[in-house]
Amino acid sequence: MQTAVFPAATDRRAASELMFRVRAHEDPSTLDILQPHFDATLERISQCERVILAQETFKLDLTNPHMRRRKGTKYVEPVDPDCISKAFADLMFAVSPTGLPLGTVWHRFQPCEEIEKKKPADQQQETSRWAEGLRNARDVATACPKTLCVYVADCDTNICDLFSETRSNGTDGSASEVQIIVQADPEGSAEAGGWLDHLRATPCLLTFSVGFSRKSEKSKVAGHKRAYTGTAPPANVEVRAMTVTVPPPASRKATQPPVTVNVVLVEEPGPPESIAPIQWILATTLPISTLEEIRMIVDTWSHRWQISTLISTLREGLTTPHGGFDEPYSLEELAASLIISWRVNYLLCLFDDWPDCSCELVFQPSEWKCLCAYIHRGEPVPAQPLRLKEMIELVAQSGGYIKRSRSVPGVKSLWQGLQGLQTLAFARPIFGSRD
Image 1 (cartoon, one colour):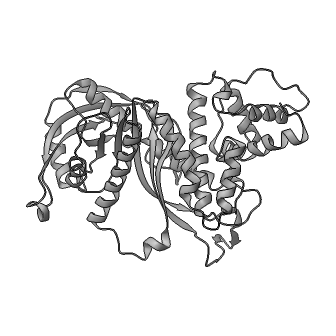
Image 2 (cartoon, helix red, strand yellow):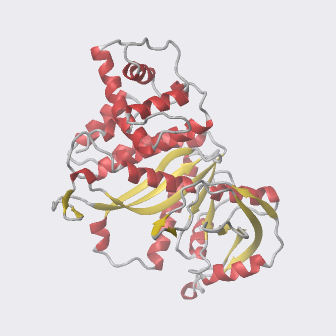
């Protein structure tokens, strides 16, 4: 059991001890581990006027890479019939309109072995999965009635079915109603392909720059594949919009009425060389009456990349050492690691946006004091709390980060620093000062 992940997933000793007690239970569940995080996320959501609820499904390798044994040029995984080596994760992540990650609000972890025994998912199963996510988004909106919740997904499903799910629940246009933004694929959907031609024929309504992280296409340099490592420049996009009527599938024309949705096309004319162009066909229930409403739809979708960042952080964090244990992750430890990945992303966003705030905005006094005593051995502990940027750098330094000019803490150093921070906070009252 990778016990180091549990203290890193909490910010207080009582919460950490509670997580250990849950893990020691005969039949713990991932919901028991994540419930305090869900509750705290809902509290953060309730403080916002609008939030983005992004859903994503992905596959995770739960095998600790440090337990692999080398055989020739390949790594061979140890054979353990009771080990869960891979799992599917279905997550819904909340993001503020400014791009600040607020936390996870819904999850589902399932071993790959259980899914592979079933038949491949058909269109109806895909629709059910995204409809389930929409229902969970509606639960969030009910818990936070003063917050406008916008559900965003890049889903391979029938758009009419998904938007009918909204209509069938008696939405009344109030703030607690869940709005939808989904990206349609013009190659995978005949409807979206027809929308693309009609949208391009409409006049351009907006032209502006969209700045976000995006990967370039791989290129060959001296016979080797190399990805573009620099920061991609902001994309200058053109925006068009129209209202369309989506018919139901042919098999349900008699029972299911068509739905009317608004469609926004965001397209980048003449993208830079070696960088994949932007082309978003966004079907939404949000209004498109004014330019401000259309701009809000584009800004909302552009923040969906935060869930991709969370997944990338989680995958990278799963490769870190875990206190010398040579065991695979359990689903409970994966749940704790999900909280750590959010904490890492949250700290990195605060590092860039609010560097001069007091570190006690995030950290407990016992944490920053013990870390100062550990990093600056022999020096007196400051009387006033550190700046948030300074504290995050200290946490990363305890995890292996070497501070240089123009360098910023990375995922692994912060992840490992958080794993050791609670241990230092626990030990300081025992071996040193109790302030």
